[in-house]
Length: 101
Image (cartoon, rainbow, N blue to C red; front, side, top):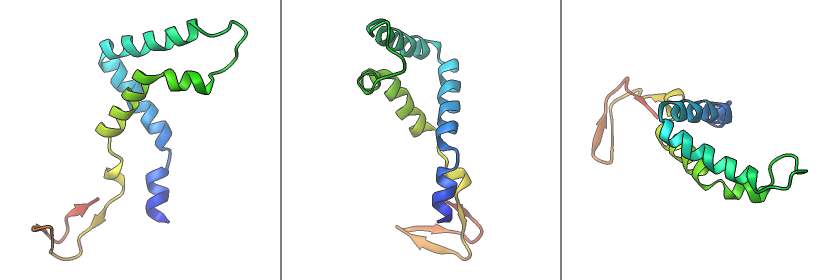
């Protein structure tokens, strides 16, 4: 229960914020993502409102930007446990007091 709530708390908003931040820091990636979106909008019927599932599936580059954001930004820093005693795992010693996620 608790881990699920922490891991899911506002995660979409955080990923959107971080993706926006990374796009601002990397203008060449922003330009490519923007060009993809403009091409999709240009090819839609003029009376269409909203985004279709077909259009979402065409957003290959933006999807890769989001995937990379998910890879780079970890939310595990907010979901951790503290080792109550020294213990071994896969040949490594985790000392008492260390934070693990």
